Image 1: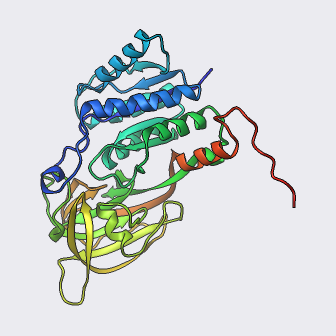
Image 2: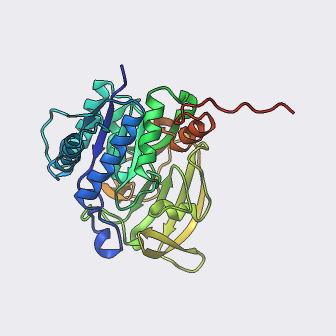
Image 3: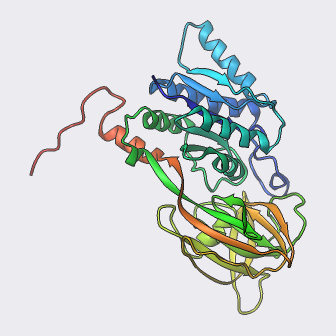
Length: 347
């Protein structure tokens, strides 16, 4: 029996304050539905026949249903069957949490996620060992790699149907556990930033004057957001163990002043006091005594001088579909041609 796939499409990603203060994108509902249809077609081409989908009131599901109906009217069957999860819709992140948990319990082989860093973090917090395939539809998209959704769908289909060996099909990923007073309260997939502002407010980070400390799982100079600051100082790949810690402040004498893209089209001058590697499994206690904690670019937790905060990076914390690895394997072994792979001539 072909494995089922879960799809979680966030209808409200990319709608925070960075659309106002920067030039962040805003995908329309029809565009998000078209992405889902492209993924569905690729999954069906690989033999996936059933998909569980998170219900929402944004309209993605209705647009997808129209696409399925048009295909059926033309006598075509290029898509898997869609099964909406029987769950209430609140229009909050609770929907994503519950959908990921329900999909895990249902035994899906992978979950395709449409959203930004925050949506992917919400899925990873509840999906357990189920691999995630990310598609960028948010404001800051440091975690989901940018590529055509059809390719992500193909790679996911090839991976879950066993056409690509598991050691190639899936990749291990890092996360940071955020503990408050001895208890893990939240996780981050990309970065944790400590800022001096106590209020959560608009949540999204875009005022560098309040940035004080930054902890990242990977530091990529090609992304935007807080992790871009670390990436432009000392790159750390997704594959290597550990991350990076950076101490920040208002640009002043004696500091390194870095120009970094902290949001789409928004360059900011950030003062850098110092930075160092963040080994896996070692708790870090921030120097900031009170303020708020931003997870993957959004402020989530306020804390005071009476609270005990610690951050611990975990290697091999969850799995993703290795899209590049799957497609390279598919090409080398001609998985999509039906022809055998060429035999390499001996020297």
